[in-house]
Amino acid sequence: MYKYHLKIEYDGSNFVGWQYQKNGLSIQEILEKVLRKFLREKINVIGSGRTDAGVHAIEQSAHIETKNKIEKKKFLAAINHYLFKQHVSLLDIKERDKKFHARFSAKKRTYKYLIVNRISPLALNPNRAWHVKKKLDYKLMKKSLKFLKGTHDFSTFRASSCEAKSPIRTIKNVKLNKKKDTIEIVFTSKSFLQNQVRSMVGAIKYVGEKKWPLSLFKKNFKSKKRSNCAPPAPAHGLYLQKVEYK
Image (cartoon, rainbow, N blue to C red):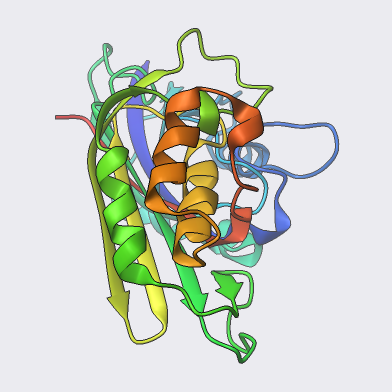
């Protein structure tokens, strides 16, 4: 058996998320159907983690095991011929050793969130960023990020349905960039809780709108109570940017 590492790009707008679900089409299901047809064997695609319905990926990571030796150039051309119609693209495939696991071998995951802060609606790609009309104070938003960096209990930003054993996570890096009317917030950690990034962005947006002073942002974060969280940011502004293994 051969083990291969896949890198995948997708527009999550029309999917129920990464993982198989009964209520609609998932990225995992699309990939497995195409790969099984091409390789003529049962293929299980194991992702680095779940992305929710509507969330996009610049570079999702996954692995497969197959009896077939894959020739990269021909394989990418053939698979993408079928995937492209679904707004999914296989960016790369690389053979890995037997110990590699897309989820458990990952050392860092980076997500970015896009906010377009302007009065006018988004005529281009309306499902690719969070449109916020009210003027945001990005300098205050940037200050709120310092409370998130490091190792903390992120219970306030954890979905009630989250199955993680511990709410403790370490944010290794967090930054905010602004270019014209677009605000980009980037988070890097080994792993994230369910809805953690979207919940953090929702709270940061409250700071930017001046609904919450920085002191209240900090207080609600430290309370470890989900009830003290602002409404989570919508899924369509979130992107899985990169998964690193070294």
